Image (cartoon, rainbow over all chains, first blue to last red; front, side, top):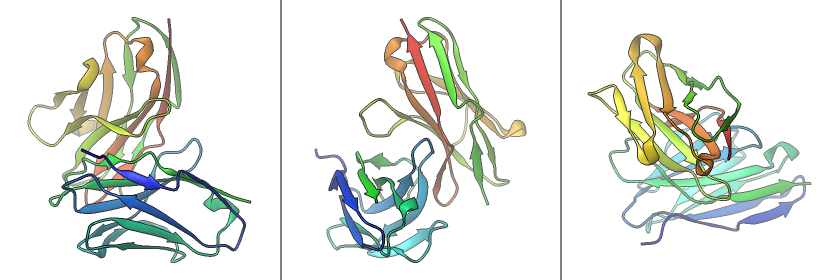
Length: 113
Length: 110
C-alpha cells in the first residue's frame, strides 16, 4: 500500500518564477493538506482540499494556490516566488471525517535563489 | 486563533534518562491533540493522539502524554529514552485544521 508520494523531491527556482508541486495521497484517502516547513520551524498550514475544493486555508497569500483532481491527487502552485518561499513543502492526506490524523509525504524541498 | 507552544527547542539526554517535552495550546473549545515525530531522514508520523476519555494516552515506542485541560497542556513523556528516539517532536492541535508547534529536537547519546 503506497503511502503519500510527492514530486519533485528537490528543486531550485529563481525569484519571480512559478512552481508546481505534486502529491498523491495514501490509498483510500480523499483529503489533502499542504504545509510549509521552513528550516527550524514547525509545519505551517497552507490549505486543505476535499472533493476538489479548497476547504480550509491558512495565512498564506494568494500566490499560493492549489488544485485537487478527481483521483484525489493534488497540486500546489506558487507564483512570483520570493526568497522567503524557500522551504520544505509537505503534503498530508487523510480520509473524510478528518480527525487530525494525517499521513505525510517526505516533502518537496524548494530553494529560491 | 489557536496556537501551540513548545517550550523546549533542543533537548540533549543520555540513554535511560527520563524525558518530558512541554506543549501548551491556546484554544477555548474542544480540541484533539497530537504528537508527531520526525526521525532523521524520514517523514512525519503520528506518535500518539488524544480525542476524549482517559487524559493519559499511550503511543508507540513507550511514549505517553497527559492532557491537563485546566493547564491547556499536553506534555509528552517517556521513562527511559533510547538512542533511537533521537528525532524532532511536534505537538499539534486540531480544531478545524491541524496546527503544529515549532518542534523540539531531541538528541540521545549512548
